[in-house]
Length: 504
Image 1 (cartoon, helix red, strand yellow):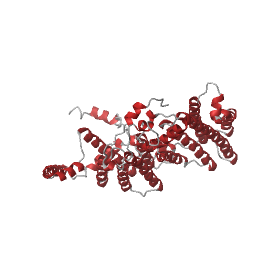
Image 2 (cartoon, rainbow, N blue to C red):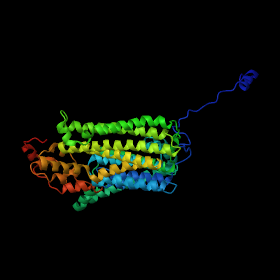
Image 3 (cartoon, rainbow, N blue to C red):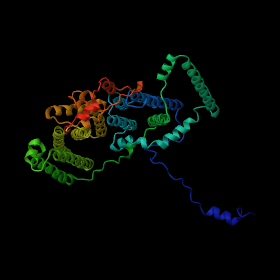
Image 4 (cartoon, one colour):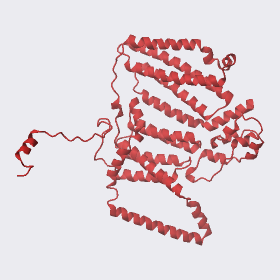
């Protein structure tokens, strides 16, 4: 009898239970929030369409131009075809927003606004595909690009097994592609040597590729293909992030929140009443206050806005979540107190906008100052939306409304054409005061060129700077660049050297 078959070992084996082997739970999300489809595989048509979209992006993406909306449109078509359910109004609105953001690259050339628009399109796509209503859901939906890689890799790997029908077919396709490339290259070279006209056509049609450009195109291909697969996965396996939002529990009584929030409202009212001169005194208040400059006046309003907005929104969020609203009296108290708090916060927002306007009038317009103004307007719109939600005591739509407001703010900034707006107002300021910063204006994109043409010499040539009119491919067509190239700059470097006056 062996040791394993001995009665003693059998008794021990039967009467001493072995602890179960537990596999580590590597899932980040519970199944009710975002189930992991273990046997789900990417459909063949989705994989092929994603590869095609990656090829399109690798060919047409580069400098700001029409390649951006072409790639975005191809990606949206793949996602719409991959989604098993009907598209809702929310999804259609999201697709329109993504196309609008990508179209910014056709009309503007300023890198910062184009980059902001591209990232906004990514965040909007994630938030819309998650179909969330809550704050938690929308924020996590916008962050899905960094939450998806592992899921998409497994999903793609399972779908790739049935894509080519085996290694033999993939190898034959590679051989066919290599033979085709050799034949085309050999015969094209022979035809080019036989006819100079054909050689010129071939040179124009063939892009110049170097190692760096090839690596860059390969990275763009991988990025666009991965993004398309990620969006298709979200369309077929939507997360339910709203399930992470805990139910509302009323923990405050009426007097428990009424006293502190009412005291805060009284403090706001006292501050606005006492500081009315500094809030709306403008240039007169600056002149009569010792040691106060326009720069300090504007910066003080900006930081005041940020602090008041953050703290007020926090107080409002906690109060709305915890305050009771069972009877009409409790609902009326909530509307009145929080409405007054929002109104007084809007006064501070208006003051900050006024101060920034004074700052720009004296020191000129810049990209940062214009961006800060846009953020201030967005924060003011958030207070208005909160007030609107308090009228009907329903805030389910509020997170999406704030997201739409953010989208409209970025698109409105793009429609404004920031660099052209900055250049136009600085030129007008120069006409009134004779002060201008040509060094800063020369760093603006080609969006500003038509406005800078209004300057007299030698300021005009110096503000235009040494801009290079590089040849662009058809997919890099940009309205702003095309308009700027139509304006012939004259005597730029010589004008800068002759400009012997202060530029501020």
